[in-house]
Image (cartoon, rainbow, N blue to C red; front, side, top):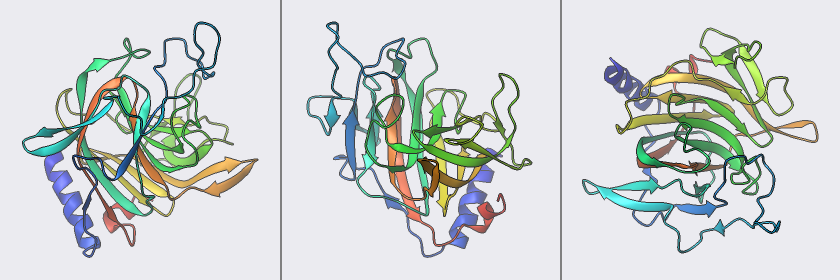
Length: 286
């Protein structure tokens, strides 16, 4: 059923946008990406600037560093696969900015985990509409952005990064419970400047077993977005924005980051195409 639904969705989208073509974003040289590494974070990190044993501030490793194997391209059946070791916090991010697009890729988990997540779930993410400096958020690593969470058991969750905010169709939270995405609900504002902090659970678990490839899709059009996991729409979002000095500013364009976050993960078949309109098959969710 899942495979049939995915085929139907892709076919419907193609009919809506006959002139759009898929562009491959992954090659052996990572020619369309830059890389950034920050720190080997440790258990107990709380957002402060990391320091050495003598109390001196540790500078982040930086942009496109040599001598590290956190991001490498290997081959699988003759096709390039991006291996992210996860040993150091960081990201690969597109050299270009993107707006109004359909992104799709495949990912699967590796075996390794690193501090501070050795006893936690494996974690990564797709950060979209990424703008401004690297290291802008809690982990001093990534740009201001919106997050399509990639985590064991949480594929498709939402996190805001730095000063971002968005509205999500979700049940309201209560006591220690988080908001939960659901197509039947009205849009709920989350993130910077809102009463509810910037996290929302996806509407269900559609992740394949560990070690198997998952197909993830991200639809973005004029401030609206959809998180899709193995053909299932798991979150409906709109009014993407960020907040500076109390003023909301639309956040609809930017780079795409793939996170290194203390877990080994693989990506392949990373493709993108532009959208002139929101495809009908997806517009119904709004």
